[in-house]
Length: 395
Ligand SMILES: *Cc1c(COP(=O)(O)O)cnc(C)c1O
Image (tube, rainbow, N blue to C red; front, side, top):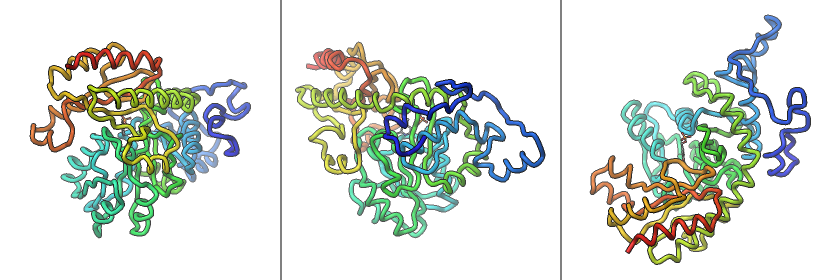
């Protein structure tokens, strides 16, 4: 697909007569291996492993179609698909660190990524980490040590959606020869292009908006051809994190509507965030699309749109009352994850209350009255009426 076309065309179109027999949708290459006609031809394939179809644990044509499309949208040279977002995060982090490395990470990163660094890489391999607020570049500068090999970003971050100035942080990292990874799942490769701002490796969970139909778990890393080929040869192939061709095919289906789905998620989310913000039973709304968002200027500088995941605090922290709101919703379904067609609600306190002591929980800055919603593709008025129904249960 030529890069001269605009983004929406790149998402929808695979190129004229690209697929066998003129099929408008590509077939699924559901084969574990590829055969060759001679010693010489399989020998040639091994000379270029990262780009050859030899064995599906390495490359597969259906998977490659998704990788090429995602790389084009993100304006990166190359992409590698993984069976989950966490598979992509693990490979990305391992590709930058060695025994005794130091990582600077944003403090509100996705929970399992935090656990991977703190509860696994640290005790097993002596990898140190400093968590920073990340709202100013000085936070990163002050945290850098002689052995810092990686700065790990997530902008907007999880639950509170705090931003980092991506261009300024990568500028600092490059001047100190430190690698950078960004988890770009919230903004998607459509609304934020970190590779154009100097980030080394962009990561997405494809299980959220890229998949969009709550029927695929997947992940992707996008970066320079050299970096992706290095990851292919090591963290990808050796750890065996192979995405399934069928899942890749579902993602191709999803990408055709990514731009148009995001437009609807965005407009609905903006309406809902504004409704919640002025509601007397709501204390605070966390959504980068709102005019009142504290980092609004930075948001407009580095993102071209906003998606549909937000958090808000109810005025009450009385658990029974919070539950009556939560259980009182009829349209919003209760569940983890986000970015699909269906609207979801989750209370971060449900998992945190199990993992932390009451003192630790208070220290997190999260309260039992904090809610996270993923605004789906239902009618916006119906969603607002549903929230109103729940909010009426609060005195
Ligand atoms: C879901 C998620 C991940 C992990 O992705 P999986 O596909 O579930 O492994 C990583 N980062 C963020 C921000 C997420 O929301």
